[in-house]
Image (cartoon, rainbow, N blue to C red; front, side, top):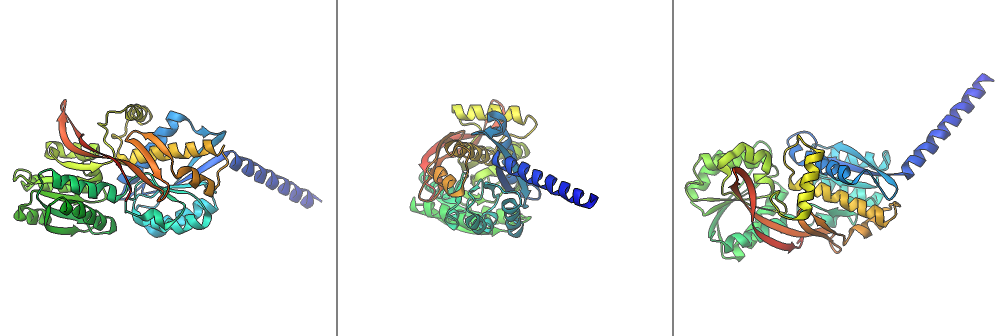
Amino acid sequence: MKIIKLAAMSLTVGAAMLTMNAAYAQDTIKVGVIAALTGPFANIGKPFEDGIKTYMQQYGSTVAGKKIEIIYRDDGGSNADLSKRAAQELISRDKVQFLVGFSLTPSALAVAPIATKAKIPMIVMNAVTTGITSKSPYMLRTSMTMHQMTEPFGTWSGQNKVGKVYTLVSDYSTGHDAEAKFVKGFTAAGGKVVGSARSPLANPDYSPFIQRIKDEKPDALFFFAPGSEDGTALLKAFSDKGLDKAGIKFLGVGDMTSDSPTLEALGDRALGAITVLNYSTALDNPANKAFLAAYAAALPNRPPPTFVTVAAYDTMAMIYETARKLKGDISGDEAVKVLSGMKLDSPRGPISIDPATRDIVQNMYIREVRKVSGKLLNQPIGTLKDVPPQ
C-alpha cells in the first residue's frame, strides 16, 4: 500500500514539475550563445557577453511580457564539432528560440544545417566571410561581411596616394577572402600589388614576413588576421623593423588597432595606422554616446567596447524588437520574417538587414590612429555610407 502511495506521489510531483517547466518555457524567451569564451579567440567571444549584458542592463530582462534568458556555450572559436554539439544541445535540451554568436566562420557553417532543420533563427555576431548567410534560410548577420570592409577599403586606398601594396593575411578562408576583395578594389582604382604572403592561423611569427616586405619597398602593407593579438604582434614588428620610418603605411582590417588591448600595448608605435571598420568609440552620434554611457555603467572594469560588443548589443535590440512585434510568440519562420528588413539606429550609425540576403547594410569608417588630448584613438577620417553586404 505504501509503495502505491509513493508511486502516486512521485507521479504527482513529476506532473507538477512538467507543468512548472511548461509554464516557465511559455514565459521565457531563451537565447543560446555559441562563442569562443576561452582559448586564443576569447577576445572575439568575450565581447559578446559584454554587449548582451550592456543591452539587458539598459533595457531590462523582459520584453513583450516574457523573460529573456541567455544560455552560453563555449566552443573555443575554431572547433566546428564543438559548435555543432553545442547547437544540438541548446535546441533539444534547452529549447532555445534563437541561436546567436559564432566567433569564426567554421562555427557558423557547422551550425547552419542544424538551424535549418530545427527552424531556429541564428544570428552571426562576428564571422565575416562573404556569403555565409546563403547556407541557411534561418541565418542572419549583424557583424559585417569581408566584402563590406576590404573591397571599398582597397578602392579608397588606390584613390588616396597608395600606388603599391604588399598583402599579408592569415592562411584560412576569411584571410583569403580579405586579400581577394582588397586586391579587387585596389587594382580597379589603379593600384599595383607588388607581393603577397600568408601566415599560419595559429602562433604566427611575423618577423620574416616583415623583412621581406621592407625589401619590396611598397607604399603600404595590407594586413588581416582574426584577432587583436595578431594586430599587436604585427604592428610591433612593423615599427621595430622600421617600416613606418621607411614611409610604408599600415593598412588593416577590423580590430587590428582596437582601443584595448592593442593601442595600450603598442603606444605611439600605432600612430598613423589606418584601418577600416564599421565602428569606432570616437563616433560622434547620440546612439553611440548613450551606448558608451550604458557600457561604462554595466561594465566599469572592462576594456573599451569593440565592434563585436556593438554587434552583440544590436543583436539583442533585434531580438527584443522581434519579440515585441510577435507579441512574445516566437516561431522560427515568423521571427526570420520580422528580422529580414529590420532597421535600427545603432551606435555605429544606421543599420538594416537586407531582405534578399539576410545580411547587414551599414556604414564603414576609415580610421587613423591619432593622439587626441593625450589619448590614442581610432579617429574616423572617412565614411563609406550604406555599404551593401556584397
